[in-house]
Structures are given as C-alpha cells and as structure tokens.
Image (cartoon, rainbow, N blue to C red; front, side, top):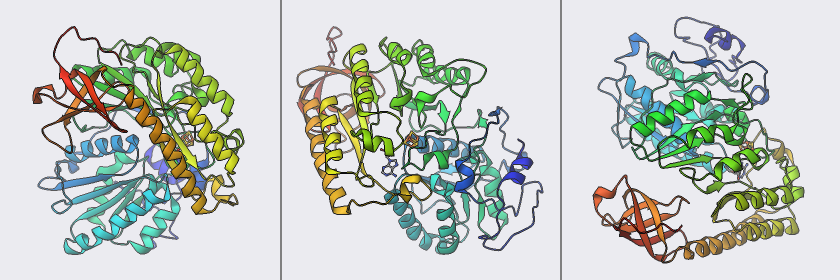
Length: 514
Ligand code: 5AD
Ligand code: SF4
C-alpha cells in the first residue's frame, strides 16, 4: 500500500478535529489531513503481506529544519519505547536538531508514552500539565505526544479537548513520518494528528542514535497477535511483523564490530518470531542459533510468551556461549482458570512443564516473570495458586502489577467483584514472596566469582562501579574507571535483596562460578 492509498483507507475523521478540517487534501505533505486512531480498526488482522523498505530518506527541503534547534524526548514504558526513542532521536539529528538534557531549552519536546496501565497514562497527563506553563512561556516550542497512548481514541479525544496546547500527536506506526509531521506543525496553527490504526510496513534504514555504546537493543519483530484479554498492546502496536533474519543478523554483526558487548533482541512476543515469514520456515531458535556465532559476549531476548516457547529454542539456548542463561517468562497467574479468562492459552501445568524442560536443558537457568493480581473475579484460592506457583518455580524476581482495565479490551467489560483493598493486599503478599526469593537468590552468590559487564559509576556513589552479571544481577564494586565497558571478574562479598557488592579480581585464572 502506498502512502496515498493508506491515507485514503485510514479513518479520516473530522468529528473531533479541532477546526473541523474536512477536505481530503493529498497535497505534497498531506497538510490538513487529520488521521485519528480507531481501536476497532486496530483490532483487525489483515492478510496483506508486510512490505519491507530500505528507502527512508530525509526530504531535501527538510535538511535544515532543526538547525539551531534542540530536542528533548521523555520516554515512558518498555524497551520497545526506549528503542523507538533512539530512532526518533536519529531522525531529529538527521534533520539538524541537537539533543538537550532539559525541557527548558528544548525547541521540540516529545513524550513517548506507554498505555499498558492506567498509572502510566496518568503520569503523562501529569507531565502535560507541567509542560503547559512552558508552552505558554515559549509559544514557538513544539510539543508532541507519541507512542502507545496516541494509538488510543480516548486519549486523543482527551488531548484534543483538554490539552489543546499540544502541537502534534502521532502513533507507533508512522515514526518515519516525523519530518513531515514536524513540518506540518510548524506551518499549521492547529494540532497535527496523524495516527495510523493499521500497522505500517517495516522500514529498515531508519537512522538511530543509541543510548550508550555498551548495550544495544535490536528489534526482531513488531506487534502482537496474542490478544490476551487484559492487554492493549495488540491494538497499539498492530499485527505481528517479523524483520527478515538477514537484516537482524547484519545489524548485530555491525554492533559487534562497533564494540557493543551486549545485545537484547526485542519484540512483544519474540517467540512468535518468523511465523509471518511466508517464504521460509524460520523461528526464534534458528535466529538465536545464527546470532550465537557472532563475536559479541552476551545475547538476551525479551519478551517471551510461554505458549510459543518451543523445544528447538531450548536446545539452542542450551548451547550457552554468548546466549545468557536468564529467561524472562511472564506467567501472569498460577491459576489455570484465571489463565483461561486471560486467554493465555496455557495451563498452570503446561507452564510448569516448560520450566522443567528449560531447567533440565540449560545449566543454571534463571527465570524471572510478570504477574497480574486482582484479575476480574480472581478468588483467594486462585491468588494462592499464583503464590504456590511462584514458590514452585523459584523465580529470581518478578514485575508484579494490579490489574488495570484498558478501554477496548475484553477484560475491561468483565464484571469485577474484587475490591481495590483486596487487590492491594494481594499485591503486598505477592511482593513479600518475591522479595524473599530475590534475597535468597542473591545470597547464593555470596563468595562466588561473577562476570560483570561494567556499565559505569554507581548512581549512588561515583567512587563505585556498577554493572550486571549474565543473569542480570546488579553488582557494585570498587575498580578502575578503565573497566567501564569491559567484562571483569568480581568476587561477591555481601548481598542485598536487589544488588550484590564485591571486589574486582585481576588474576587471569580465577574461575567464574555463577
Ligand atoms: N493491567 C495490569 N498489568 C498489565 N500488564 C499488561 N497489561 C496489563 C493490565 N491491563 C502487565 C503484564 C505484562 C506486563 C508488560 O504488563 O504482566 O506482561
Ligand atoms: Fe500483551 Fe504480551 Fe499478551 Fe501480547 S502476549 S497481548 S503483548 S501480554
């Protein structure tokens, strides 16, 4: 589908438009086209093949757009958003903008938002409240809202009616249109809204400015087709689209050549990687088997869905080497009945069986997870099944959440008889178990020698260096600044619930035990 066809098929709504712009005007930069999101359209999954592009270019006439101007991007949410921010920063710098660390001297401010839970959204609306004063002081400032919240109709309507000082709203599928959107915002007095509800194609050659030169994120796929009943992501990120393996491998090779030490392969459901590639039979296991041969010390991936976690992937991970033995495997609930209502499509027993296989195949495998408590009508017994599953697996840590209804998802329509106090109390009880296990797993490291990828000075004490083990444990230790960016050996001298303390070891022969 070309740009014009896409805009014609997109829902061009004028109902909520601030100035009732109505004409379909496909002039050169599509001025006056107001494209609002639609959750109904976002739910559809078409059969059309994904188109891959390598032809992104900054239009000649925009090359100096950012000259003498600065940008600031605030990122909320997951690694996918962090990585999108790197792409937007790349585009802005290609337009001549310079980055700044504070909103005060920025000429363009973008809020790259997260829609996963209500409190994530509240933070953004709070920030918009703060930025209003700045916008009044500096009318030339361009303020944009992008990311997952922009894909929600209700959010766009709320911004249109209550935060009309916002200059631009654009979504997750049209980041590459940023130059045109900015141009439109400079020319127009009205809010520019360009959100595509249908996912875009895969554009390979977008510029990126990576944060740091030690660890890097690499997208392997976009979107999610799982439609867990609580989750907004399939609506905000569109259908599953895998990048071609050769493009991914080339990107990882390039990062290795640049000296990066750790790569995290990213996708909302990485285990579905390759399912949409119609001309080849190729999955995450095949991809990892290729990538492990690249000379880079550590490879991670996130996030996994237990349902698509196949035996071939386990076999490949068991080969070790640069494939780290830490797997983030969201379980969400320990109750088969709740899992069914969540549409996770696995049972408690199937999850435990998968964990058994992983632990049997991968020596020292460490598992972490995500859990939602207080799902609509979750009973005390069902919650206790989550606690017992946690103990049975013995996770190293977990991200735990109270269920948050998301408009447009099936769960938001469910009657819910669990009072908020009960949900909060369950979260506290779960967190007590999470903390107990986290502290226990850290204690296992006492007096052991670990390999640490040193990321920099500790946030709390610049005299101390900080880095992570292969299993993603934070380690603080004294060492020379020259160790930053290197893999070093550290002997653990004391442990806390969420971090380890140690001493750097210089002897070549010291053997890493964990
Ligand atoms: N409410 C609470 N937690 C949620 N998550 C996703 N959607 C919701 C929701 N509506 C959690 C899941 C997911 C993690 C990224 O966020 O645990 O794995
Ligand atoms: Fe959301 Fe993950 Fe389920 Fe996809 S697999 S719907 S991203 S929770």
